[in-house]
Length: 370
Image (tube, rainbow, N blue to C red; front, side, top):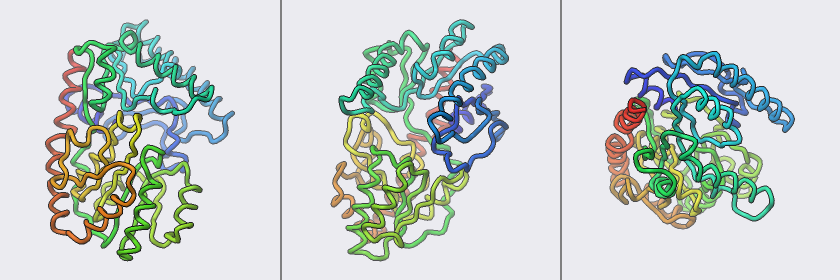
């Protein structure tokens, strides 16, 4: 979203970022400001807090507070903007914003980064309820927004049955390349991962594969970057494999630290699993990996082979094969020159395909036309 805001600001389009509630990923309180300006871009957490409550009652109260404050915010500022851009919307959570935008004749843009109807597998009452809610969202997107932006080709294929091509656009993962200078000192044998530690991200598989590779190459180390909701389970898995001294868990880190933490690694991993939900998404981390110039191992999930080439700009392996991932880790440290070249070409591919300056020309065009 920061890359989006930068690109729009640079194109002369005024932007303000408004958050209905704090992200669960900030539970550790790394981000402390609830309102301010970030590099000339104003932002505000409507709940006046950048930290989400941990209790269910606290979350409910915060949601109610957010609902009424958002209405007030919209009424006060409605004459200052022309377009409401809603990132990854749920109708239940955003219906008041959609309604107010329609009543005040604002244009509405949705951006979908996931196929939410595929998220909850199973047949419990709750899973079926949310699946039906998300299917309703997807089928009625044409009635709720003026333009829909999706992040993957599979999402585009899914939504083209519901919207005309003139109102549907694909903008892939993006990264602000200016953040990555690749000047960090490399740490020998360090392998990195950054992300949300969700089921789709295959972090358990990374640990399983690392255990296999580490037995053959004891110099290897693993760095897991990001807030982990399942910290106790992941930590228990690491301890059960006697890898505590070999695995670093950073917890949530600030935006500015991410480039250095990645660039210090000699290898980066994306281990998405083989599910419908994962195939319809496209992880932002991949663009950051490529931008860092560090050679990257990726599983063949979603759009990977539409943008990347095995042994040219990435090393592509099948999904959910721990032994294949472990072997790829070992190959990296046996064929250093080959993989270093892959890393450099990955950066070049990123510049051509995922640079925010290139991709967001599409967004600027959409905004100006609306």
